[in-house]
Structures are given as C-alpha cells and as structure tokens.
Length: 133
Image 1 (cartoon, rainbow, N blue to C red):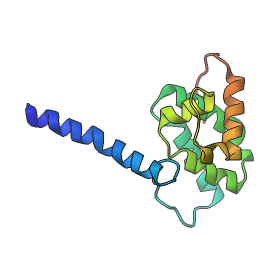
Image 2 (cartoon, helix red, strand yellow):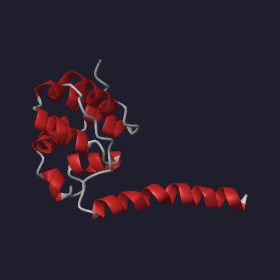
Image 3 (cartoon, rainbow, N blue to C red):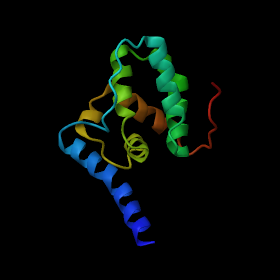
C-alpha cells in the first residue's frame, strides 16, 4: 500500500515540476511537438479538435464556441499564437480568458488572446452547448 501511495505522489508531482521549470525559463505553456509542413487546413482542423476536446467542460465550451465563430478568420500568425496558447493548462486558459486570473505578459500580447477574452466577455453566464462540427 505504501509503494502505491508514493508512486501516486511521484506521478502527480513530476508534471508540475516540469511545468514550473518551463514557465520560469521564460516560455509560455508546456512544450509542444514542433510540426513542420502542416498546411492551413490541417492546422485549423487540429486546433478545432484540440479546442473541443480539452477535458474540462467550461474550457471546452469557451474554446469550442470561439473556434466555431473565429477559427476560419484567423491569420497564420494568430493560428500559431493560438496553438501556443492551447499548450497551457485548461484551468489557466479559462481563468485568463474570463479575467479571474492575470495572464502572463506573453499571452496578453497575443491578438488572438484578446479576441478570446472579448468572446468570453460576450458569453456571460448563459448555458451553452457544444457547437456542431
């Protein structure tokens, strides 16, 4: 029983340490696999999927409705910023977008993040459902 408990502690603490190490290094979010040669259609589809299947309902609703309204209009630079933003933890994204926590300076400077904040402000407290694919 003791070995199982110590294994849990190691498994839950290890990603947190890695996250803090990356943030203290000046980066934003968790490190992501670099994709080369990804065309815009594939990138938009991947981002749409990642924005819809986050794992936390509140973030899923916020990001999936944002994707349905704005994803087709984003520039390649904004798509790259959005990809970087999505590498963060779900609750961080939700709290930053809704203004409940201060986002890092690098995130605040992203034009796509400002659009997401505006989108979150317009949603209010209405009950939403996932948009159709």
